Image (cartoon, rainbow, N blue to C red; front, side):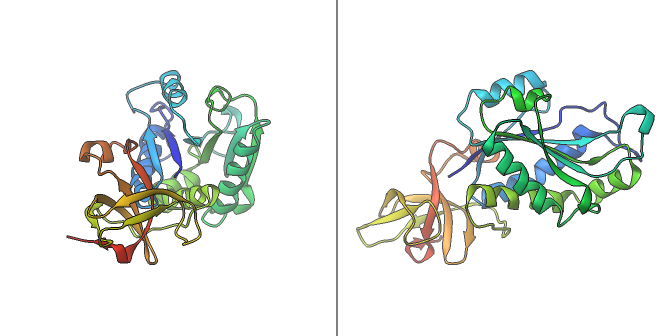
Length: 261
């Protein structure tokens, strides 16, 4: 299952029209993303709000992430302050995986944007968070925070933006999107002495990534149709809610063979 480095803005000095700042609102979007990431089985690590960009990049590079995702909002040059609107989804020039992720995100973002004709995927070699990360990387400038209309749109659509981005991630990673969020719970494998296939996708023909022993405990993260997204073995609670439930294996099991408490 995929592993994401989530990097919301560390820039509290970028003030929003109407009040607030970039760091606050991008981290609120990340807050809304976290339970959706868990429910879709996307393992993740999030940067620390008290750190800096260099440390965040180093932390990303210390792991084996499938995508580095930076969340930002934009501002016009002083001579055009408050006049521009729209969304730019940046990726590193020459990165085919970054380009694919950016194009998926931009295409999906047009569905919720108040200015869909101003949503673009853009290659660049000028952003350090794209150039210095070893994982494919995308940086989303969600809208222009110095434009009052764009700033209000961000503030009033935090969950919708988070949901849209996570949906784009599931498209990129090739897994079904699930917005049925619930508190993860522990359940047991019930296969009458046999083993249960843990699969990479909710499909009987999908590759088996592990065979779960009968009566073993799993953490149920989400549901899609007749399939459950589970983590094995069960991580401790602190690990799960710090976004670092990476000690185990995450995949899909057929729900009929899981016994709930």
